[in-house]
Amino acid sequence: MAEKNPNPATGSSAEAEAGPPGSALPDHPMTRIPLPAHGFETLDGPVRALGAIPAAEVISRAAVTLISTAAESLGLAPGEEPDLDLDEARLLITALAGLLAASEESLGERREPLLDGLRTLQNAFREASAYPDAPGEGPGEQLLP
Image (cartoon, rainbow, N blue to C red; front, top):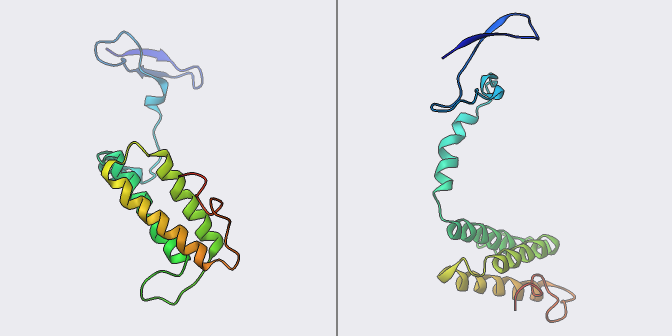
């Protein structure tokens, strides 16, 4: 059911759309604003696909990415010339520990292998450091027992 309403900005009349079916509410004004072509429609598929992945899987993938990147920063990447960046490694290891601490109850059987990876990185960091941190003061050590 459309009716003519004058548009105060232009002085012309415009068709007013009815609201949602079965509702007496008028349509929201934002629904009639044309959106510019921006390419986001191509993201709909991948974003919806990601939404179907369980949270524990997303957290695990993020943890594996942190482990891999920290290992590279510690010069542990296989087949490559070691390139140590202890500042980056410290940040990545601490982020991994924080992620694992925050998701402690969510990971289930995935948690233990990720913790093993964290401990390996912490030990490698300590060995690579010219002046190792005191026990309990290394990257992420204060976040997890």
